[in-house]
Amino acid sequence: MDSTTLHWASRRYLMSRYEELQSEYGRLPDGGRRADGYHFTTEAKRIFPRYTVVDAMLMEVERLDPDRLPAVDVLVSMMLAAADSADSPLTDPPYDEVEAPAAADERRLFAAKVQHWTAQPDVGADPVPYRRVLTREESSAWRTSLQRRWGVQNGWWHPMLSGAVPPDVLVLTKESMWEGDGVDQVRRVLRELGRPRVVELREYGADYLLDVEIVAPRYTGPECYWTDEQHDWIAYASHEGTVAFGGVLAAALVATWPEVDRWRWPGWQAPGDR
Image 1 (cartoon, rainbow, N blue to C red):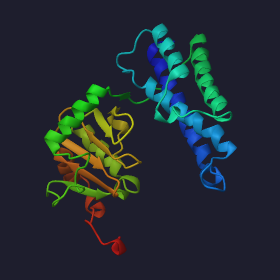
Image 2: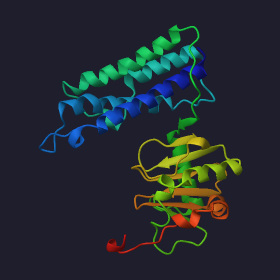
Image 3: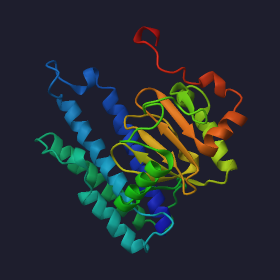
């Protein structure tokens, strides 16, 4: 097995496993909480630690640059180390007698997968799009750039800033990226501009360098920014149900997306009018 195939297989397994566990958790009645609303059911305790551990392992695997992977024997050791000790703020709280075995078993499952793959003579894996966790230094530099180039203030951009939204800033509703074809339109424009990779900066959690084919400017919990190395465009998804675009991306969307006016944000309205 070569390094690229092992990295693809590891990422694909962990992404699939995370979605599976998240879906399983989502099917629990009452959000997995007991009748008092404060304590989790035994079933929830068997699932929640698993997908927090899977998320931590995936993040650790994606700290590696797919374009610059180490030799396969080194990579195997790194995958096994991720299985053994990858952590995050969600894996830090002490586990009880139900949660601890579940978390340990999930780590064992990934380690067993890695060992199984490397023991096979001709294991293959379908490619996965580029995604890499940015280093702390990279994240800091990108955030400084957004502040200087686009006037991001305290993690906010238009229309969350005080004052009127500039006429060259395109603000759409969140539905444009969920119900409409907004995500496809953004990817199309970036491809036409020759931008193969995009930076995604999150309100919390890891920041990423992404393949343009998986960029999705949507609000999913943390507020997010997107841009690239040219620094000539920005996208910002806010908790207020807006997605704003600036620079060459905004101009191209206005010029080439026939339905863009349908999704324009109407501005701040009284609560009863929303």
